[in-house]
Image 1 (cartoon, one colour):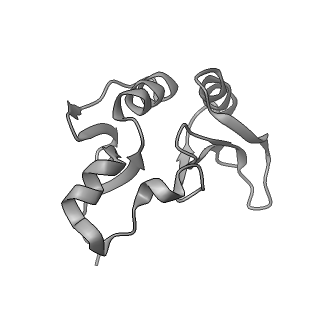
Image 2 (cartoon, rainbow, N blue to C red):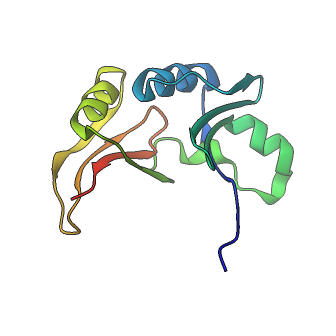
Image 3 (cartoon, rainbow, N blue to C red):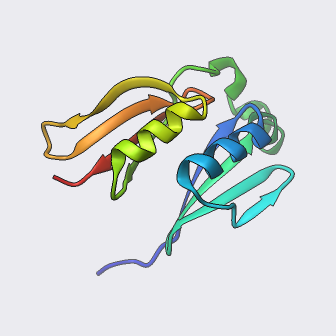
Length: 130
């Protein structure tokens, strides 16, 4: 039986506005929500990308959570986005400050995928199904 869920993937970011500008430009989307402490992008009917300041999650969960800012720049998550033209998204990300990891090439699993790091060191992959 398939369970109906809405998936929110939330990345902890150092600077909410810079990350909002980055993802708006790279994804060619405007946020569906953009308030102090949270930005959201509706990626699909049941999939939302959220951006939350590192300080916000620390304040929300307190000392039980290791301080996310201590891992700034260390890859902590990967967003694997299947798109129509992965090279365009990959190059657009690089043009807005992403750091290249691997150009779009055919991968062992059949997809063509390119990898980069976003402004906070999260791995961002743009792929086309093989």
